[in-house]
Length: 353
Image 1 (cartoon, helix red, strand yellow):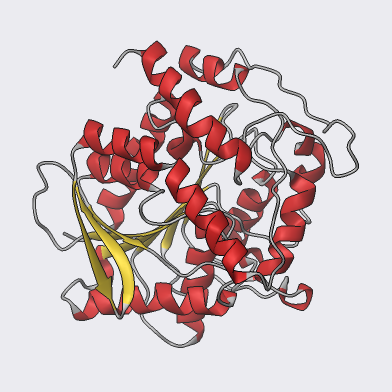
Image 2: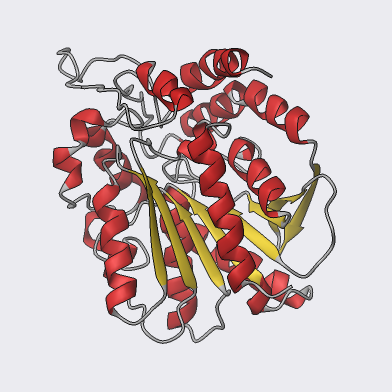
């Protein structure tokens, strides 16, 4: 598929979806009816494909969120997201031709994703999707997981954790831990397991490993994070300095959304905001990937510094001009391909076959 045609279906399928459901790429207005402050400079220092992509971005959409107690409203919103992502998911499946089977580990539903030409070994990636803790699934996140499986050659177990506000945040954490432990019982040693977390899934993945450590459990060998949410309090400097350049989500609204996920008194809890965690003594080797266009950038830096200064092993891998979860939003960008190649090299180094 040529670059023009590929970008056409991204615009037709993915961007309208993201415009109406978080994260979003579309013009919008603030709650008071005024125009959202948004600036979209197009950098010259990225690939031509990325320049075309960035030039088409607009102000993020504000979500029409149901009340926290409106379970039917949330289910409708979540199902609408899945329906809208259907076309993009089918295209990525057709392009990469993975073998995908629905399964469950410790009663938690998952998708077992094996890349085309998969050669069996003990390595496995536990994939924790994004969506602000309230949207997304193992299915709708295939534009991230399927290319990653193809480029690494590693089987992926993508978790369909239960979303907020239908369950408390701690239930999601328990489900991630349960899947990891079930994989160990199924014959995958911790030294052959990595966890991959995307956006909110990055915060959930890291928080889950911090809880495992606090419980005295053995941890997986590696952690890979794409644009992770590391601070639900959103106190980082780039929420202010880069907020007007953020196309993926409304910075003000997402703070309100996080209050649906956890109460304010828990925002400093390391399981919720991993920048406050302890990483000395055996935390997994961690790769943090993100873009310089992200309002979340401060959180990437803070998490890297926390791990590094406490004696852990961390790599901060930033991409010029890239937006939130670019590897999943536009998997065919040269920058996305490079990011996945670096993931593959990292995993080959730290996972035992």
